Structure formats: structure tokens, C-alpha cells
Image (cartoon, rainbow, N blue to C red):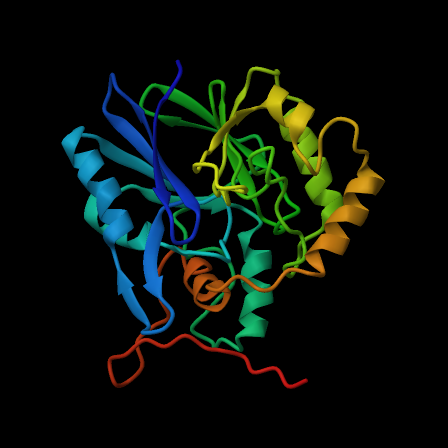
Length: 286
């Protein structure tokens, strides 16, 4: 049964969130929802999440899952906020404890933060099958961008997270802690081994040359035209390109607050004794 798919594009972070639903039962899943954060003021707003909420309530849907493809480094997740408003289980891949362990050290998090994945309601294994109403879905382990990336397949639609972008943008970086260009290439080939007509839905778009934002491609289009990983590019060429390119990239603007929120399934760090929550910023001296 093909799913109904409604995308929501956040122009500030270039993120596409999705509501995937079964019209027959009214069950739905939310994929990669955004929490709006202004780094200049430290102010959090829920404008993007409320758009998803309004749509879900208008369609009279019931949220069964809030799916994260990975612990994002470029936007804060609104999974916790949406669960409190709409219900559903927050889920991510079962390798998330490795990411949590890495960033517990980076941010010197205290004993309150236990890196065992318990912040999420459910951890998916590779190839695990689950349901959204009468829709059947599969979780796919696609490491490389991070060591815990997942894609989610509903019938002929695969939500690829940050593994792939639109053909004219290419592929995700692999230089975050635990990232690996070899693994990224193999994960991409895993996705692109699907039938050519398989629809691929991106988590981000950074439109070049003034084109309008886009988020849906196909396996055939990616294999023929992706500027980083089309069929004429082998693993060695890809890895050299990816490593050289990653060395020139700056850290995402929202990297530090995003990671501290997203390893907690969308919860900000716990409030301190003055009732205020704080993000940590490690200082690096050159």
C-alpha cells in the first residue's frame, strides 16, 4: 500500500520534515521534525512543529511514530515537543548509544546523561519491519554520515536522511565524529540497489543556481546524475572527493545546540538550579 506523504520545508535550515500516513486508518508517522532555534538570542520557537501539528489535527490523524533518521547536527529536533502534544513513540537506529557516548565526552556531560539510548522510546535494528496503520515500513541501517544513520522505507518510498541529496547537490559530509566515507559510499550503494523507480525523499536541500527547493528524486535519477556518486564514480574516487571536500567545510551553524538536544531525543539539557537550561560551547584555542 503506497503511503500518503506530506512534506514541510524549513527554509532556515534547509530541512524537509514529513508526515507519512495511512488514509484508511488515520495513522501516521512524523519524520525528522524541526524545532526552531535562534542562536543569537537562544530563543526556541515551535513554528515549524506547529505546522505539522495543524496538518495532523486537520486530517484527524493519530501519531504512532516520530522517526529520526539520525542525531542531526544542523537543526534541533522537535520530537519531544510533538510527542507531548500528539503522542507517538520517538524512534531512531539502535547504534545511537555510540553517538551519545562520543558527544558525552565532547560536552563533558555529567552522570545525569547515560549514553544507552533510553532517551528514545524505541531503537530500530537494521531491516526491522514495523507498521503505521496498515502501512508496512522497514528500517534500514545506512551509516557513514554518522555511525547511527537510518533510512525508512514505505512501499516504493525511502526517506534517506542525510545520506543522499538531490542529484545536483550530491551527498552528505562524513567528517563528523564516527563518520566514515567508506561506510557512506556503501550505504548509498545499498539505497541505490533498489529498483530504479524507487522514490527517494531527502532530509535536506540546498538549492544551487537559484532553483526552487526540491526533495524527491528516484534511484534512476541519482544513479545517472548525482554529482558525487553516479554510476561512473567508484568507491576510491568518491572517498577521495568526500575527504577533500569535507576538509573545506565549516561546522554547521547549529551544530552545538543541535547535538546536545538531539542525542536527548529532542529534549534540551536539564534545567539548572536557577530554572534555566543551558547549552555548552567547548572552547578551542589555536
